[in-house]
Length: 181
Image 1 (cartoon, rainbow, N blue to C red):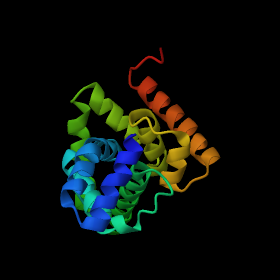
Image 2: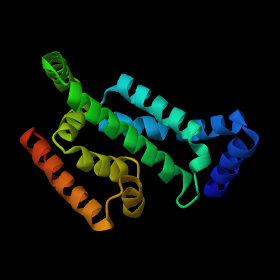
Image 3: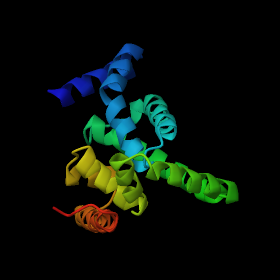
């Protein structure tokens, strides 16, 4: 029923330019998309908010291109995924000494915030694609098939990223005082 409701709302936005219908989609997906970014950015709430806002702006401006080949949520997460990787690419191009210093200070401050921050720190040890797969699968409860659609990776590759990422997280947390049991 939820999928049908999403399609109905998308149709209202495309055909009638109904912004209230898009508001309903934003209300429904705002928290999951923000949480997705919060995990990908390892707890940076301001950046997560900015990336989520960019996602919804891009979704609104491109909503006519939604072809219903996948669920609306998969389409939206794909946009979010692309926004995040565009951000990562631009950051790598402009990464300088000041950014590394800020990251180091931020990293020290985050170590003092408890278990939640430990999880974010452990997520930093993963490659971006592993972090994306782990976040979607374990924190957003997205199926492996949907993750494959979002990332553009084959199902087997998604499973490999999940396996490697899970092992890296377990090793990091074990080394930092967390028991595997």
